[in-house]
Structures are given as C-alpha cells and as structure tokens.
Length: 240
Ligand code: SAM
Image (cartoon, rainbow, N blue to C red; front, side, top):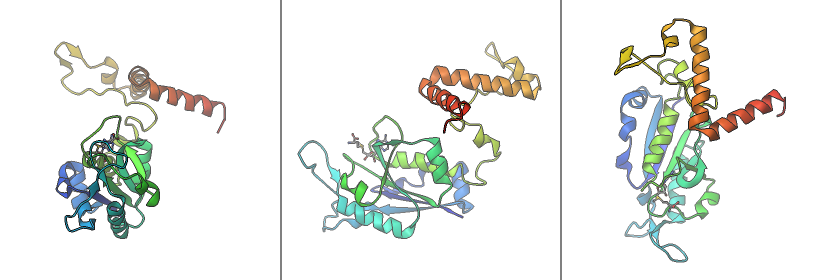
C-alpha cells in the first residue's frame, strides 16, 4: 500500500523540499509514498483569487476563509478519501510519536498548511479536521510543520529504514529518550567511549543503555519521566 501524502498549501513549490532527498526521497521513488499538492488559491471564489479576509472583531493580520478552505479540503478528500485531514496549527494537540505511528500505519495524511493569522475556526468542526501542533513555537506558515509531520511518518513506513531495530529503540518509542551514542575514535579530545560499550558483553551493554536512557529522561525531560513512571506504577498495580 502506498502512503498518500496530500498537502494543501499556498506554496506548493515548498514540496517535496527536504522530502525529495535521502530516505524519504528514495522511498518516494520506490513508490512507498506518494505526494500531491493542492493549491488553496485554486479554490478562491472571486476573480482576484482571494483566500483570506480581515479578522472578525478586528485586530492585526488576515484569516484564511472557511469557504475557500472547505472547497480545497473537499477536493483533497476526493484524491485521498480515507486519509485524515490534519491542520497544522500552534493551537493544536502536540504531535507525539504515538500519533505518528498511528498515522504511518494508515492510508496517508492530508496536511492543511495555514498562513497569516491562521484558519477560520469553523473549518475544524465543519470538515472534521484534526488540529496538530509541532511544538510550542510559532512558525510563519504550516509548510515546515507539514514537512516534519510527513517526514516522521515516512521513515516509519515498511522498508524505509535500514535496520528495523533503529525504529523501536528510539526516543519516545518506549516513553523514554534514547541512550547516548558513540563511535570511533575510541579517544577524542581527551574523552573516551564508556568502557562497557567496548566490553563486548551484550547483556551489560543493554543494562547500561537502559540505565542511561532513564537517567537522561529524568534529567532532560521530567515531564516524560513522570508519565513513564506513572504508566509503570499503573501497570504494576494491574490497573487499566
Ligand atoms: N495566529 C496564530 C497563533 O497565534 O496561534 C499563528 C499563525 S502562524 C503565524 C501561521 C501558520 O503557521 C499557522 O496557521 C499554522 O499553519 C503554522 N504554524 C505556526 N506555528 C505552528 C506550530 N507550532 N505547529 C503547527 N503549525 C504551525
């Protein structure tokens, strides 16, 4: 099955962009995913091809019109009927690796990219659009966010990554950050690779990596650690 990526944007020339090279570029050439862009402006209803208007209630900037967006979304749904439509917005639910895994296992993603002040709010309920944020930052447009979302999905598609284990051990897959990595040279600028990693003892190495992942998660991401510990306590108590 080919994963169908559809992007609704005012700047289709930004795609495939970084998704045209490396893993994602090769996977597209191999037919593991497909890309279609939809120019939102093609669905404007006036002769000036207007896609935005001033905010109701006043204030700075412009807002993308619901009627224009709805027509563009309906067109995208006709191209990829079963793919969820995901609006990129800082007001959305933060994107997680778990959601990315779900999306990568599905038929594809239709990503709606905002510009200006964003979308007329009515589009979210009127067209069953999921709102997703890529982090607590504000970008000038949804395109880089859509590229991130698609990149995260594409690398998980069957056959895209080299070694299957490089996916399952990574940060967030088991609620923790990944352990630190090292490679040759064994000594560099007075710093050496931890002895255990050169021991050849796979059980010891696995135990060290688990411990490092836990320490780093606790120190760097106390929010993740708390959730991880909460889930562990719950499962140990047999609660659902
Ligand atoms: N006025 C909006 C707000 O304060 O929430 C910000 C609009 S932003 C300048 C323009 C567009 O960039 C948004 O409509 C959205 O598509 C995209 N964007 C910006 N930050 C984003 C984020 N953290 N996650 C996903 N999309 C984002």
